[in-house]
Image (cartoon, rainbow, N blue to C red; front, side, top):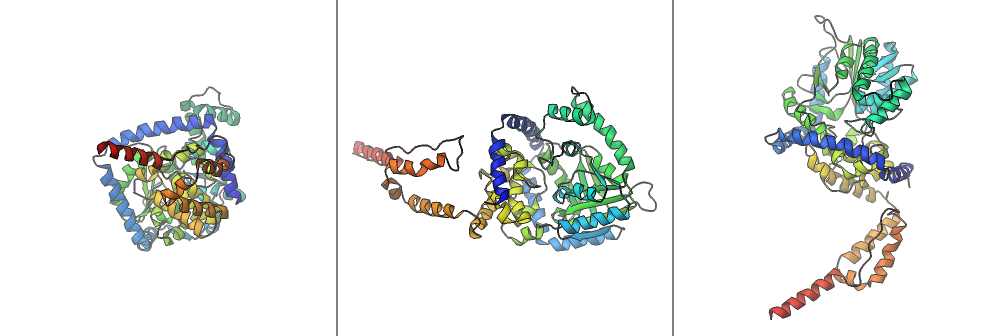
Length: 465
């Protein structure tokens, strides 16, 4: 058993029965569910909107290289330098070069899962540059020394009491501070960071091919200030974020907002196409766009998994997933958690080490049902499981057990052949190995369902005669 798999099993066992954790997650996701239900009601035909968005993203995947080249040509024509990064090492190499050339001592970062993927904060620190998270949720988990718990809601696992206690310990704010007071305190801290930062770093919700633009959506204004105040702006975006046309944002903005937070529209929606021009008073003097592969072309090469690249990172699949809500975001030990993380992480980090994540699903279908771009997540999870078996990354005993079960379960006569005592002896060890001590295997009765059914059917036939 690999170390990541062992850690996953241990962490899942621990957190799944943490009642307080479950209460916090249940409360926070209940707020999300209520807001999203209202958001869905605003649509005349939500299914049609999802189908249209899915069709656009699949059109992108069919002509991926063309749209990326179009984006590059359009944005470089206005003085933006585009850098292609094959992996984390190349991306960090580019970032470090930019920071050194800018003699940067402080960078402010808007919320970006892509920068989490390459561990930007730690790498910047290595060369003496402080990286400050400016999204409130990201700021909270950074202060706590943690990683984002959720794609959209980084501090979902913390209650307002947890945050008040954290800020009291770190900053000396009153322990009884309200959320509004804590937010005001953070705003004061971050305003000073924005105005003194040397570099601003953002991700991109969408890369717009036809205008060569970067679209960033957020609710606090931190993205706007991260792009506007510092002299250098670095965009780090996955190459799957491309969309063909600017006018398509009219479809994607509401879908992302509704599925992500229940809003009709995210508060701040910015489109950036260049650094400060000669006739402009404000904006960065230099702008760089780092387009990150880091395993995405491996996903693209797999026909069964390719559609997962259509993801717009709304987080809907996480919020609907019973497994995610039970074991939490940190148990996955990966940048992307929940169903979408379970699909793509094995490609990003290796099936041998992280293929077990594709088994962290009940296959209930809630994730695929709620996806705004119609990604067949359960189908891809099943395909990933098959790959694990084909590559012999699953325990040998599992294959033997499944082969035996398939043979016995293939015919009712085989199942009925063995008496209940033998069947109970066969499954009894599961009460101690594999199932854990929180549940118990049901016992087989002396008479099977088929025998009851056959007897009842025969009796009914006789009565009719």
